Amino acid sequence: MSQLILFNKPHGVLSQFTDSGTETARPTLSAYIDVPGVYPAGRLDRDSEGLLLLTDDGKLQARIADPKYKTPKSYLVQVEGDAAEDSLDQLRKGVRLKDGTTRPADVERIAVPDLWPRDPPVRFRKSVPDCWLKLTIREGRNRQVRRMTAAVGLPTLRLVRWSIGDWTLEDLQLGEWRKVELYFSL
Image 1 (tube, rainbow, N blue to C red):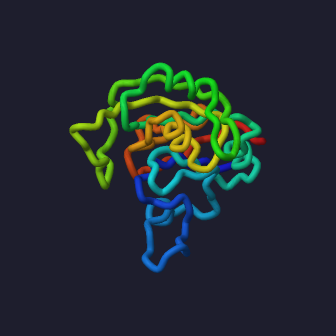
Image 2 (image 1 turned 135 degrees about the vertical axis):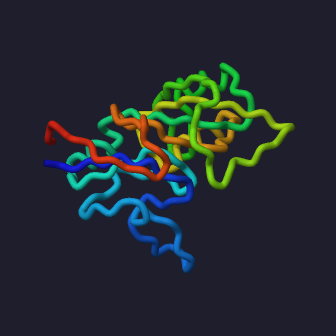
């Protein structure tokens, strides 16, 4: 039976078990998860937070991460600026990026979500408004959500992946993980 782990990745943690990128060690998954043989199904940037799935099943890993399967990934995104409907419509239609036009996203403006405090906190500026969006994409380009919001004039301040497919962060505290029973195989 395949293992699947849901992990609420903190800001600043690399989505890998070792760090060979710098002389100064950065936090990795090994500081949180001591389960042999599991690997991330997709990535979550170091400066992003939220749901990261890990599995020991290569087919499941590909099914989750490969854009051809169009697995929906939902993000709670704090953006700089006041998101007008025309900016949201651009995201809904697809945004032209340097590597091509994105697939249409589902997006809506939401109330400030009840999340854990971020460490370090997002810099607050009294003179610059911000707002929160819930954005769902079905592909996974490098830093895609950040590039999409920037392309419509709404730079991302904080990015929290809330769900991948049917798996969510529901009841999972920052830095915690849990195994999920799988009743199927690919």
